[in-house]
Amino acid sequence: MAARIARTARASGALALWVCCAFCTAGTERAMAQNQNAATAGETLYRERCASCHDGGAARAPNRAELGQMPLENIRFALTRGSMSAQGAI
Image 1 (spheres, one colour):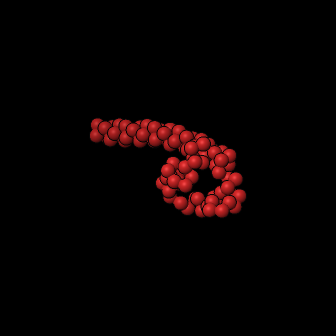
Image 2 (image 1 turned 60 degrees about the vertical axis):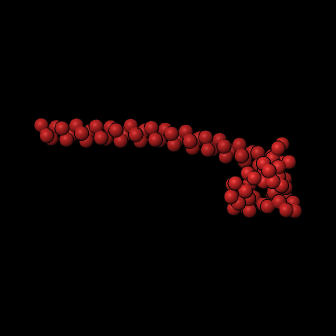
Image 3 (image 1 turned 90 degrees about the vertical axis):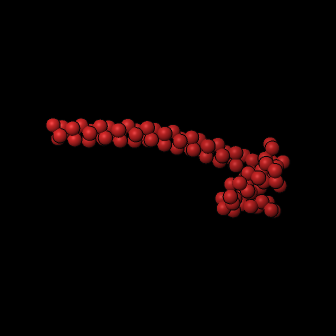
C-alpha cells in the first residue's frame, strides 16, 4: 500500500511538473515572439528614421555601436525631452 501511494505521489508530482513546464514554455515562446516582433519593428524604425544620421557620420550623432552602449533611459530622454525631441516627435 505504501509503495502504491509513493508511485501515485511521484506520478502526480511528475504531472504537476510537466503542466508547469508546459505553461512556462508557452509563455516563454509567446514572449520570445513578441520580443522578435518588437526587435523587427525597432530595426525598421531605426533604418527609416535614424540610420541616415547615426550611421552616416553626422556630427554629434553617435554611431550605432555607441548607441548600443548607452543606457536606454538616456536614449528615451533624448527622444522625448532632450536634444532629439524634435526627431522623436515625428
